[in-house]
Amino acid sequence: MKISKKLIAIGMSLTLITGLTACGGSTDVMKNAEKAIENVKSLSYDMDMDMNMTIGDQKMETSTTGKIDCISDPLTMKMDMNMNMGAQGSAKVTMYAEKADDKYIMYMSPDGTNWMKQTLGDAAELEQYNAQNSMKLYLEGMEDFKETATEKINGSDAVKYEGVISKEAMGDVMAASGAGKQLTQLGMTEEEIDAMYKDLGQLPVAVWIDKESSLPVKYEMDMTQIMQQMMTKMLEAKAQQTQGVTFKVDKMFISMTLSNFNKVDKIEIPEAAKNGQETAF
Image (cartoon, rainbow, N blue to C red; front, side):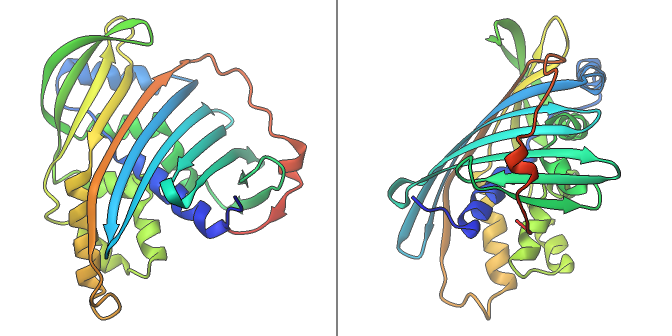
């Protein structure tokens, strides 16, 4: 299947929303988890996301899995994403990112052979892929949490906590996810995006914290209701352009498991990627 850059962008924009997970609070267990993740120099994470929606009378079901390796200094990443879009086919996207001198470079390929690259002025656009920094932010945003279970994650005992991201923290969480940029690309202004973030309510989340290391090792969230609210607000903001369009989010569920803490020693970027065509993704 030939994958267009537009299709890749759609798939990756869905992936960006994974940054909307969170956990945190004022108790010692959450503060200890924040300190533990802050000291990590490298890690891996596996992501699973199911997103089903209905646009008009057309249903679209997308299942995305990803494997990401990260080194914090110097910033280096490798991302392998697999998207299954049902009748619309599937796509595999490989991405790398690195800091080179004072610039940041992203590399992308839909087939492992043909590469594109984009030079960025700073790391802001990469932060949405940085599970470590995102987790630190979200560990401050979770409230009303309670311990609900103890389960094996990565072979070790981890305590599950369930709570919510407060509506006051939603704006910061959304900004960190990169969702604002995607909405801007859809033609929304910053004022319209800020208005959209208001009154979204709370976002239920679950986080697992390893008993021995205090590291956050997994999270899950059901974003179905929040995404439906966002899409409804977007259609309202662009009523003249979207008149008659109906959009229903049937399901959006995300799970991410973190592992290999301080065990990702090196990420080698292929020469073919470094020689790729400079473009904007």
